[in-house]
Image (cartoon, rainbow, N blue to C red; front, side, top):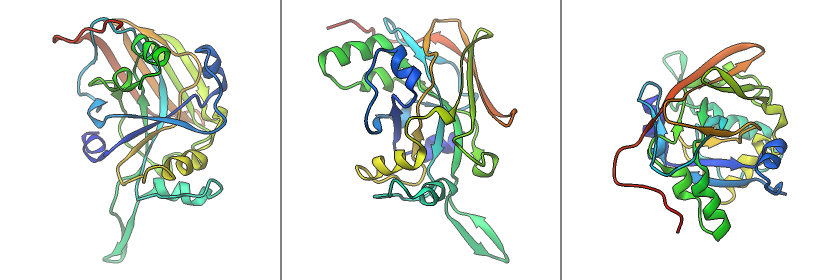
Length: 245
């Protein structure tokens, strides 16, 4: 939704939050939530066009459950599950004999697109990953999913297929760090604000896509499909071309 992109002041991504994903990339499992940022300009709302692969970039997909933060969160206790869930519920006001939602909050499906070769070089040289994660169109999202549609965000099925071939399929109950711990660690460093997005990590099965490939990702609860993303990969025009330095 355009409103999700317009309202997102920042996008915080939890990395290495599924054991098998950590292993497939030969990474070290973190002892506490590890997170990084993507710019809101990377958000690609539904129906806004293709993912654009910059020249020289090895493009990887990562399907994730995203939280749409509904109110300010600061110094949340890691054991405060109610506080974490309230952060996703948004702010309500009672007027005219009924409740009105003042802020939109809940969930959406997301694809954390990554320039893997760009990231690998940055990791090798001890540099930030901002370029690898931050290109325009590198964060396709679904339509907004109301909080009531997902009774337990730790019991959600995520999947992604490329050209009809299933590549990722796992449940969020495999998260290493659950959502209250994620929001706690983030909010102790930076205040979560209304409209911010938090990507909760990707399961195993990440891999490359090429120009012309079509990805379809989905999110299910108790077998019911809530939302999907279907998006094609096209070549990005312009002067940028990644070269190892």
